Every structure is written in C-alpha cells, then in structure tokens.
Length: 414
Image (cartoon, rainbow, N blue to C red; front, side):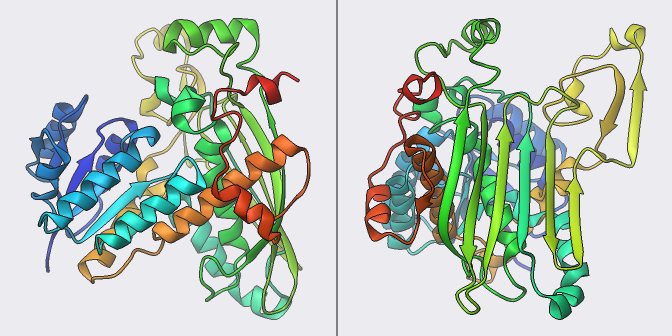
C-alpha cells in the first residue's frame, strides 16, 4: 500500500490537533513542515509519535518538492498567497498530488473562488477540511435513521451550534485579518452541518439549493468595558475601534430541486460560552423521528476540588477551550476522533492516493464561503436575503462585510 507524504504549512493550534488525529490515520506520514513559529515543536511531536521524520523548510517551494500533498493550516489572511506559491511550485515541477485547506477556504467569495482556480489550474486534487461533516456521531445517527426517512420522509429542520469562550490567537480576534468574527470562524461549521443533515440519502453535498437566509450578528460579551480591556491587554486588539461579533444566529432555507420541498437550517455560534469548554450541539427533526448530538455528554467525568486544582497547569488536557480546572468536568478520551479530524484526514489520504478529490473539495468550500458571506450581508441589511436573485449573487462576488473591513462599530454598536 502506498503512503501519502504530507507537508504542513502552519504549525499552530489546528495543526497540532490534526497531528494528534494522524496517530489514528493509515497510509500517511508527515515529511515536511514550513519553518515558522511552532514548527520545531510540531516536528518533535511527529517524531516522538512515529508520524514521520519531518524536515523543516524555509520556503513553500522547497516544501512542495518534498511531499505529495500540502496541508494549509496557516492563518486565514495568508492562505491565498500561500496557494499562489503552491501553484507556482507545481508549475515549476513540484510533484504534488493534492492540496488540503482548513476552513474557511476564503475570507470572501472572491478569495474562495481564487483558491479553487489556482488549485484547478495546477491540476491538483483538493480537500476542504470541514471536520464536523465527518463526525461519526452525526453520520451514525443519520445511518440509523435512514429506514425511517425512507418511510416517513426526510428531515425538515436541522439546528447546529458551536460555542466556546473565544479563540487562542491574536489574529483570530482581529476581524480585518480573520475575515470577521464568530460567524466567519465557526458559523461555517454550523451552516455546513445543517445542510449535510438535511440532505437526502445518496444525494451530493450541494443537492439542496439555498433560497433564502436571515441572520443577526451581535457583540454581547466582548464589547463590555471589562472584557474589551482583557482583549486589549492580552491580544492587543481594540474592540472599541474594530469590533467583531461574538454571537450570531440565523436561518437558511433550502429547497429540494426534485420535490420542491422547503427545509430549514438554524445556526447559532458564540465566543461567550463560559461553561465546561467547547460545546457542539446538533439536532434535527423529521416526521415521527429525531436526532441529537451534544459533545458535552461524555461517558467520562472527573471531579477536582479547590485544593487539588492548585496543581493543574492546563485545563485543556480534558477538553478543548476548557474554562475551568476544578469542579465536575467533562472529559473526552479521544477528542480528535470525536470532532471528525481523524475521519476527514483519512478521507483526504485515501482520496488522493486513489487520484480523486476528497468528499469535500475546494468547490464545496467556496459554496460554504458564499453562504457565510450571504449571512453577513443579510445581517448588515437587516433583511431576509433572496439567494435566488442573480443581482444578490453578483453583489456577493465582490462583497466584503463591514465587520471584516474594521467597520464593525457601524453595525454592532448601533
């Protein structure tokens, strides 16, 4: 069996999480890492866990000549430039089979479309990393309910939520670099998950056609003086001047093109969830049946008293984005697998070795970006946006949200 040699561009939080997932993935190894902050530590982790013997490279071009597929984990504002360098490296002879990009594919519709064009122009297979669509908890529930759907009909409502207390990195808080706030960061997950759950069995990921979207973006916690000061002191980001939303909720209406039935997807996301830590919650309702996933319902719980908590160095060893190190705590014994990171990596590896795109390709990633930006536009205009209107589609092609332009005060403080 062949082995896919991976090259990581980016060695921060998500790259480290995916390296943990790689311990459970077959037929791949980490052979190259772009030499930036955290790269040496990531390489050491890979060697210690027999994921490969990665070498560090100072340029994207060098890296592309020492792997079969590049994985873009770098910050959002760097990805288009990185993709341009990858495409140039391939044209210069780099033997790449494919390219993987962590969500979001682009900060705007134009960026996402350019990512697609560059990858296809370089004849690269693509994989868009949207881990929640690969969660076994979701897909096993869907599989279990297929007989009921065949008799009763498909889901009519899906709801998806992702919440935690806020990002790790400075650039994530800066809407001009990240591309927005929590909608750009996590709304992309929830919008995609809703569509995935609602899609009838055997149909492609983009089968359901989006026809309308409504959305509200708000700044509820991190706009308060106390918490603005925390952001300024810790990250150097001033939310009095360039705020981003920390709460978003909205509804997308999809249409089944074969039956004409309308179904709804509701998404809710926040950077102000100060309970156990990261919470993923999804549910769906169909005629006579339902499903629900809650990541904080774990078969493992631990208790830490006040005195014992003094010796705890890192609460996140139990749960991503954990905000507490004492009391009754939820524990995930295998977070990387539960969140879908293992499955999405295996899908990309198997697909590229077979010479095809992954289950979710760059075109799909561009579609998600379109829906996220449509949500921003609907929130700015305060309307239900008609996604069948050709003028709206044209406007979205060149649209950049006020929040991502650093003008969030115009829509969040009014």
